[in-house]
Image (cartoon, rainbow, N blue to C red; front, side, top):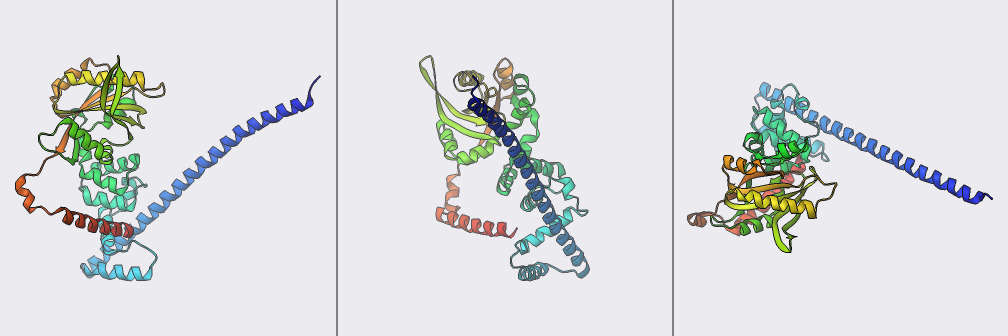
Length: 368
């Protein structure tokens, strides 16, 4: 005998499951379109703001040419505009000068064709101030990297200061086997990950520093270290322990790269690169692949950082290594000569200056 209640309950469950799946698809589609609409709206608003600042810059240029007004124009214009629009920020003397520079750099209003619309006004200003106006390719490179990596204006400024473009531009000096050992496009992304050299200028260790001191310094300054490594790196562990055949080993730094979806083993070596270093790194990669890596993760990558490498020796050392790895140099801050200590500011003076600079920078950011 057919149980009508059981049949009805089964049909309701199937309809419910179908409704749940359909609803989830509907909800995700609406969310996706909302995010797309919000992004388009934000880009439109940002573009209109940039266009307004460009217009103001053109007006200032035109009036200065007619009336030969000097620097006092900015003081008076800043004061009058701020009084007329008290709730609107962005009319500081500094920002008005930035508008003029912006307009003079893009006399035909071609900024939206030259650089991504997602760049904020402050990021545009940093590019104008810190990158040679004639070097369009360099400026565009930083702009695209800013969008790709999601840099704020401070990160963009720091990357320009660290000469990231120069270090990334010449790929011929990068010593890796990524193109041979990794599939495309992973090999290209991994190659982009490598810098030459890495600059650990936030460390102040002496000439006779040991690997342990450098390692500890990087751990203590992990935020700066991750910024120097580049986009997508997350720290998984330091002095990461692995056990092979009942023996304990320690990996200097174990990272995970969210763009490559793989673990990255980083080993630090004081002094010149030695061929045996690749053997040790290859051993660690095998252990991570066997003990930590999941089927969803990509091949584990190794990165060997040394103070100096001979490119030919490094290429020979990598030639028959099956694991994907790269070899790069790093630079450390040099210790200050003792004769300079007497003429340097005290710690209290430096802290006072930094506090003053931070307050000023915050005010300028609010006005931009």
